[in-house]
Each structure stands twice: as structure tokens, then as C-alpha cells.
Length: 77
Image (cartoon, rainbow, N blue to C red; front, side, top):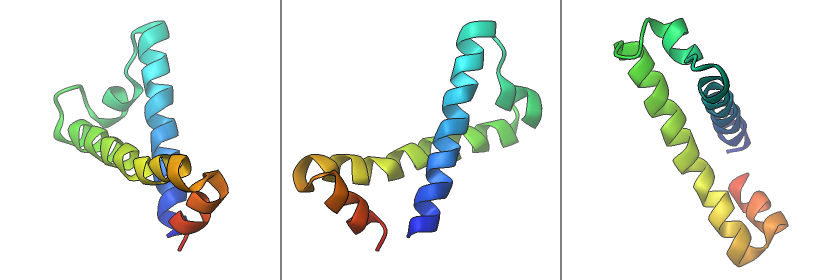
């Protein structure tokens, strides 16, 4: 479970950096890498990043009910 948490966290960071580049320079890095805003691969990348954010909601919500350390421990099992 730890591996999927690390992968999803990295994907969320990539998505956040992409949003930063869009906000500061109006440049969509993912779109440039995967062939344009409407390209299927770009859309797949956005969906995967979005699903990663949903996955990371589990330990986030658990940290409010169980405490941060316990939620992290539970997410890794």
C-alpha cells in the first residue's frame, strides 16, 4: 500500500506543478508533453492525476478522525 501512496502523491505533485505553470505562464506542460489539450493521452493523464487525488483523500480524512500518525500507519497496511 505504501507504494501506491507514494505514486499517487508524486502524481498529485506533478498535477500541482502543471497548474502552477498554467497560472504563472499560461503553459500546460502535460498538454505539451502528450500532444495537445484535446489529445487522448492528455485526458488520460488528467484522469489518472484526478484519481490520485481521490486516493489521497482517504488518509487525509482519516487524519481528522484517527490522528495523523494513526491514519498514515493505517494507509500503509
